[in-house]
Length: 312
Image 1 (tube, rainbow, N blue to C red):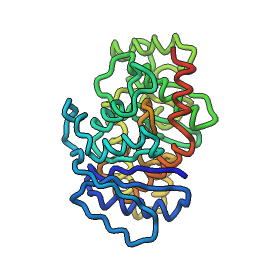
Image 2: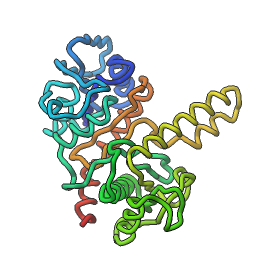
Image 3: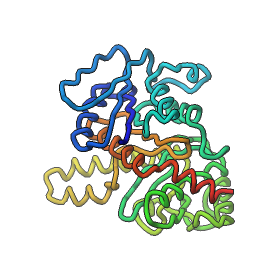
Image 4: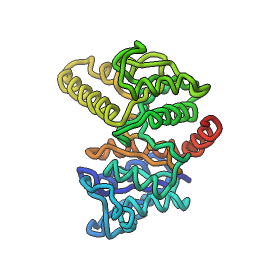
């Protein structure tokens, strides 16, 4: 039985979305339990016979809350309590659409790190046949070279844990020439070139994000988040413009990954999925299903084993 915790607070559309998504998921899966962590001011109504547990909390995280010392004392927030249950093996995965910075900070604090000084990163799958991913998507904005090197290892471990394939890492840059890029990017290039694992395939330009042999594309969180949002915006624009065209499904398939809702926070001691703050019930359902697959695959344990075996 896979036990899922959903943080119902923090999304743009309110906690109702979490309950709608939970019902949809439970209609599809008979081997899943769902617990929804919500603020006490919200009174959920479950008119179905499907098993949804609720946990009422006296506090919750807002989208504009900042990461400071007081955050770690707010133990009654929905996100804190969901992550605490994950850390004590009460759940197998936590799904949230709340504040990214707070989610990363609390996950580090409560779940711990896979390896000291290896910063967690958000990974998004860009395609599933074959599997490819982009890392980082916004968990870390100001990145030193050692952090980007760590992202390459986390991305490679994710690819090799999820699929039967070898990771080939590309470092996102403004060109493939050795002289291109900032001093940080060039330092990362030299560091990755010296490693025996993961396989480093050199710089990657923007047009290689969705195609080519490099199946792990590494960048800092600001760039990764901008790339992701721009791609989503372009997809939305194309779908709108071609709404009356029979080709729209073909265009959509070019951009759609195998699991296009939610990103995985890799590098912490548990399975955590971050959904978009604007997620509707369909998007959150996809994020929860992604989390279920992660849990069934024992993803964070496999990534931890890979990292501890390969990273020196």
